[in-house]
Length: 279
Image (cartoon, rainbow, N blue to C red; front, side, top):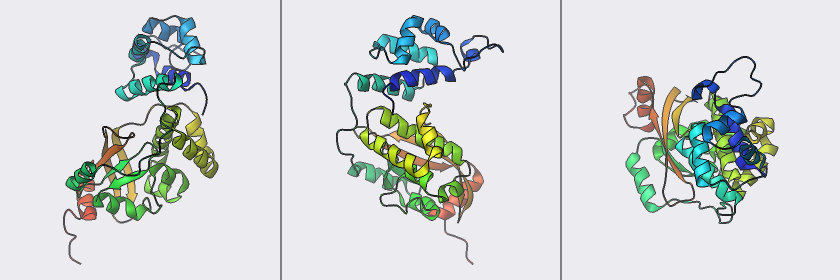
């Protein structure tokens, strides 16, 4: 990881904003992707010199007012705003995620919630993609593709180091982008466990992981649709919702739901919600 994660994040988000999105003309003569520094500075009400210092890491202590103005100008999502503030706290010594051991379990009430969600495929993951708990419905979904073979299972490690992942996820590039972005976000906040996993995956997977991890990117989406190619159920189109669990080390509850009627029928059979037809 670099030592200027705050600046890298600001620059990446600036370059991702199309001028038309903020009412500015594009034009063929633009040499800079996204917004120019001067344009963002004007939108946020700060000087170009100050924005340059922030992006270059020469100033790492922006005020809450400046952060809010930059977030508004960049159109950051709620998750991106939280990440921006955490980056500042990490740089100034106010927050570090890597000192304490990582929890490998979930609260009893969270396990009880998973039981209530049966037979829906649902799981609890940590910041690194480690699967801490899951429903039986998720085991029936993920087990046949090999995702649960490792002990302990880890979504990020499976996507980049298990050849079966490319068969399981026809849109592998999108899934890989999201997993790498999530790990980078954790490492950028000083999580030494995330940094160690990134080092392992860089060695094991090479450029397919390393290039994604090295490039500052948007945070992974908390909701969306994934396409699975399941060896028993065929092609599945699964919507997912990801919910943060309070008072934990960045644990998230992810619930998969059918995104079309064909997937709903196949998922019912796969998870045992309805009995399989005779014969």
